[in-house]
Length: 261
Ligand SMILES: [Zn+2]
Image 1: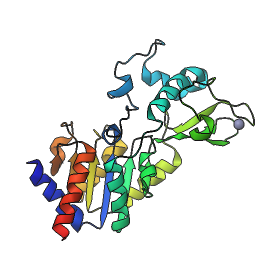
Image 2 (image 1 turned 45 degrees about the horizontal axis):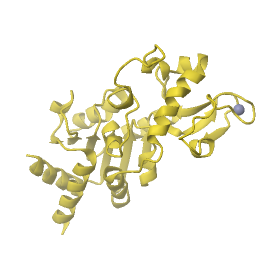
Image 3 (image 1 turned 45 degrees about the vertical axis):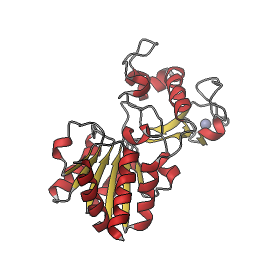
């Protein structure tokens, strides 16, 4: 079944001019990353050792009231993610962008790996955890400059060198709204009639992640799921490939090349 699904999806990809990839933690997992939103990975136990849930620790209100607590967990996530490299899924999606009329990535991942792989048409709907800014004066920082060595925990929270305000990552924490760029990016995606929409390693739990899939269904465009395990939305897909993101994308590319020769 998987081989047939791969051939069918490769055929769809070859014929498509406009492709949308909707990606989640499953893509990062192939780069050895834990997940950010408490699904498996570092924080699947619910409560932190500080007596709050990870959702509370990583929330906007707690960052405001107890920045040292939020930063303790941001730091652990940053340390776990630092040094990770894009995998085959990131790279093949970026390659397709240079080969097709319009390829977009909508990702809920905050690890910056799509950007590192070379994707430019990119909506990082929850931001990028390695971009930071001062909550008082807006001065921008990068994690590479601020934290050159993740093996040594600095004084947290990091403070702005200009105004001593608390620095935070440009990510959407729990209980926070999506930033304007994300909303604009989503609006652009809504305006494109994608030939195929592919969900890779995501359960599409957020409404704005699920929306492009629903829209494709309404437009009678095929939707594809790449996920090693079935999800709550699996039944809605025209094609399913039950493999990890990197392996699936490598097999699809191989099949695309053979079909094109
Ligand atoms: Zn500042």
